[in-house]
Amino acid sequence: MQVDTDTVNAAKAGDVRALNDLLASSRQDLRRYAEYHCVINDVEDAVQETLFAASRRLVDLRRTETFASWLFRIVKRECNRMRRGWRLLTNQDIDETIQPAMTPEPLELRIEISRAMAVLPLHYRTILLMRDVDGLTLNETAAQLGLELAATKSRLHRARVLMRELLARGERADR
Image (cartoon, rainbow, N blue to C red):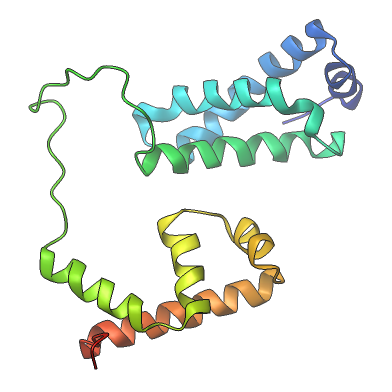
């Protein structure tokens, strides 16, 4: 995506025409990127949400040279959010033949996971919850924990390995 920094600066300064031109010229590249990262039905929604977010938060962009990568990160985050099902349904009357009911994991598995999580040391449990349940990115997790990115990756890896071991052994909190 080729972006003119003067147009970005003008849009940041409040020029509505520059903002419209900037977003219109970015749309096709965002769509192609979203097609790669999103479920096909969510592509247009992700692009629309990205353009809306960009128009509202452009003033927060620190370096105009990073505009393209900033947009791509937003659309990827939107795709991930939609994939996880965080989207609110606007039509509550969805037929079950169209939208099948989700089947939860078996109760035994949920209990085993809960027990293994209870046994994990707090710093491992926290990072697993932040990444795998809350869906934070590595950078967001590192920032919240006050760790370097490499330390965050290492801790997450060790937490997942330990969790697998606990589940394989059938570890319980009452042991």
